[in-house]
Length: 218
Length: 238
Image (cartoon, rainbow over all chains, first blue to last red; front, side):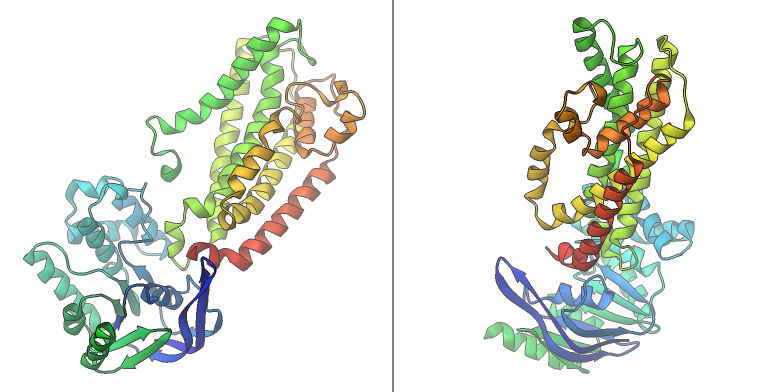
């Protein structure tokens, strides 16, 4: 569970004030998958960082219960000069998980073949997503923060990811950032929309999608 | 370690090349002009005892200063902090540099007759002072570099003459006044003097003040960590 308590976040970008969150009071409940929607640059990724704790709020509080993942995505967290296997081992160590077991799991799941032992910087974006998704699913968290990872790969791979995802959703919560309305409506039961520093939470994902569509057409 | 030396072929070996080439070059140039170095009889040994601590300091301080920029990706994990990054880079580069120093000095003593006798206490003191100063400068620079990207250039220009004023090529005692007193304030002069006192029996480097070096290092470290603690989240968002 993650709670924003009167949480405000802004920073200065080239001298102009950029407000990400303006006095937010929102509860992301346990065992619920929430789709986080918003236009480009509205601060979805920063919200994930605030939830994870890698970014701290300007004022107010972020309360967390249970273990919360790092923001899983193909943009950050893996070091470009390390191989996929080395990155996996690093993550296993910092989360106190069995390194060999996680390596086996990721190798089996992500289907990277020999590329698994090549530097991460040489990966295509599809391979990056598969690695990021595989590593995060190999670890046990109460809440997963997923940033823009869509199901990639062939139909069989998509099917496999969907199955793992559905199984995990029964025991853990998700916050799922995506641009794709379709994906969010398939994956999530609840939704939240961020617009101009205000976050609206809906327990029905379809209402969130409606609002997001409305915002985008304004 | 792979992130640091992995890219160039033979990566780790290259770290050895810099001090060796530097010592060879200095020895060749100065052995043409002078009959014997200011201490002992062996040019490579004299320059090695100056250049190695200098490079230990400059390498560790630079690497520590870059730790946030270098490990930026890994700082995306909430349980990995900038303190981990700095400590990891400090120890990796400290051991690398000590290994290099050991190899180079061992090489010189086995190839040449250097007439040196080792005294462990000043040598260990010199290592301790060099690493403390490098950690201090590195920590403060880590903040300045990450927060003001222009700092890298400013620091580069400011420290360009550092090799000349750190008593690498000469001993402090041979510098005329009042410059000798000015140079005394450069902490590297103390470090290099201490190391030479550990190698040359006749040299005692009486001017050295470990309190001064450790004091400066501690102050820089404290200052740097306070600033980093306050601003590290902002740095990661830039």
